[in-house]
Length: 256
Image (cartoon, rainbow, N blue to C red; front, side, top):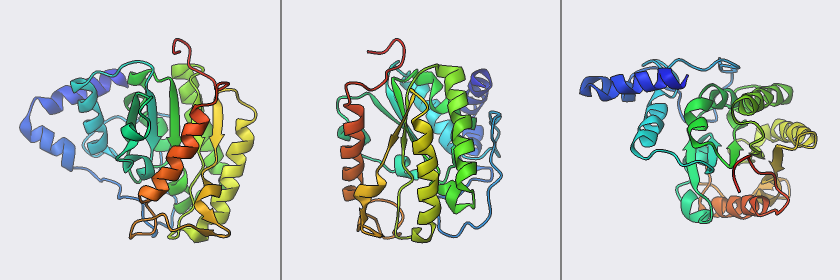
């Protein structure tokens, strides 16, 4: 996958016309919405061969270019997942003690992160991975069991590639726009939290409880009532920082 990506990147960089094509052509998935009713056709185990029609090709191209311009340093903390990560514009300043890398791409599901693992994560040989995904899977009709299975496949890829590098799963967040999906989100979160109890390399981070006011999400969203405002990210920063500050937390081999 890495070699294919390098060849594809070289071809794109070699022609202005191709660069434009790599950035703008293909059937690009839309951002997270509230209207998706059918489960998407997502890759489960195999990497996606990058072509002009690959899903999220523009985002993957940009990540490849970033890594070419600024070669990744080992033992960073990679934040990856869907648009709640992508739109975390203050990520580096919110975690000044970390070498934080943002590899979020909006509208994605868990299986997309698995398929693009060798672009998103492998080059950074991270100290840990902070993972937020699954919300779009729920919105697309996936069951809690399907979400767990998809995440287990992501972890299988992580283990095969990076060994014991820990993964911090940020719970699927509640929102006003998707309040009708809260029951399924909660069930999926519960399955992954229980699964985390069986693995030393998986830590479940609950951001649901501090985002709720009783049975209703707090006013933590921009005008679409789905994506978070600064107050929402303040909550995420506090809760995730506490998890990363645990002196007993696992570490990747070769990283302090």
